[in-house]
Image (cartoon, rainbow, N blue to C red; front, side, top):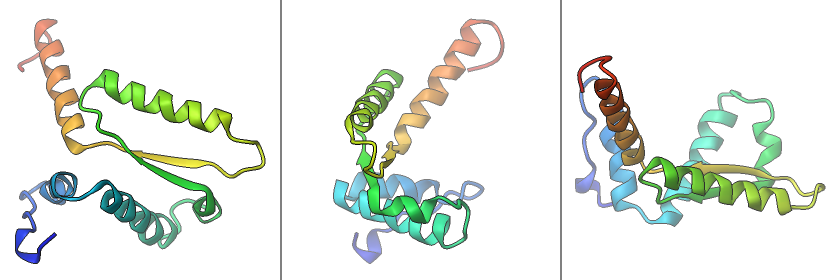
Length: 122
């Protein structure tokens, strides 16, 4: 990403526009690299998970194109199928990275459902 093309964070929602910028402008390889870097710096670096360091040799990062619930579930099912087929002696940790727009869509769908059920405003 060119330095002048960095999106700015939305006030009150730190990192939101930056995350969208990652997804729209970065390649799958760049998203995978950024995810692995995040795991190294944040999860391992801050010792947030005692198992993270041991899982790094078998870490698999999958970048999903899911933009709705059904596609999200399909992505997860596909990756679970992959993990089930691995030999028991092979380390296997998977991070499935979904586009931020997926969660915007799910929130909007949830608001419509609540409104249709008479439980609030959409």
